[in-house]
Length: 127
Image (cartoon, rainbow, N blue to C red):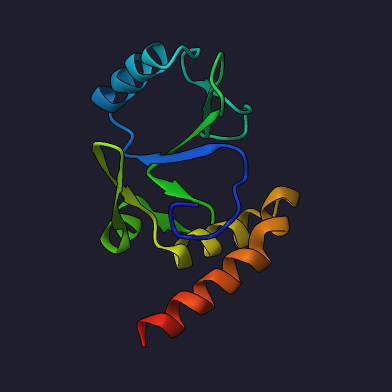
């Protein structure tokens, strides 16, 4: 949605470096937003969730996401987006598409046509 696509997958994805300070910050973040401490999605995954009294769950990816995309690669192409008083780095839409293609979950497949159309329109407008 922050890339201009009129669709969401009903969670917020964070990609962070896997460090002790970042993990402590996530615990504090979870407390601040009224959620539980980050919990693993499954034994087979390094992805964690923050859920609780949140309107939207937060999915945390450490160092990489599906599609072989690393933190540094995504950050190098990320765009800065202002939300309220905060400035966020948002993954480039092409990286979001690549990750969703690789994850190949039903919720990701459902939004891919809209994401691809949004990217095509953005590229035409940039010309």
